[in-house]
Image (tube, rainbow, N blue to C red; front, side, top):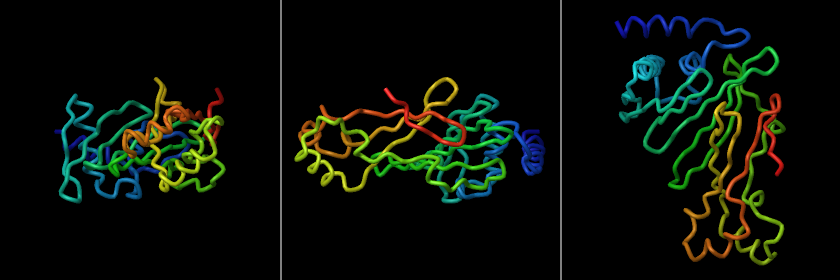
Amino acid sequence: MRRFFSIVALSLALLPLTGVARTIGDLFASEPGNIFPLLTRTNRLDMIDYYNSGQMVAVPNNLTGESRLVMMDSTYLKVQTSGSREVEMCMRKVGKDTVITVIETVMTPVPDSRLTQWNSHWQRFTSDRLFSMPGIDAFITGKMPRELRADLQDAMIFPLIHLTFKGEKHDIIEAAHGLEQFLAPSEFQRFATYLKPSLNYRFNGLKIKPVKK
């Protein structure tokens, strides 16, 4: 019986999506493999079925590992695609269209994220003007001495920024740096008092803009 419902759901997911998609689950099932290359559509539908029945069951992925649907409501979901990668998806209406904001995070082992946005046909919005990924400079207060700032930039050649959705409606994106995990404790303390722990962003149409405090 569960397999029957999976087949029905798959058929619905493959129908042309016009206007506003029904739920985030539909978009998860119809994603063509750019974001979920390790999971077949059948895998994803099984995950949805398990979750809706109150079970968080791991399903096998294409790398002989396991994937789990961790959280899902009508507009948001989080998937642990492997032991070192998770994906968050949030859908929202912009005008008459549906926009899917996707955050992919890998553990390096410090979390490092990237954000992309897509329409309901899984065509990507590529303009850099829609969202500017913060670098480590965005977390520095103006009071940090110039010499210390130079030391920090040398220490953090590759900025590792973790993004995640926050709020009851998942309408806030929080960005946090991984310096405390990346640096030795004594080294981190040199910079700690001059750093903001996190930054918040809000949706503004297609754009994602920093929240000014």
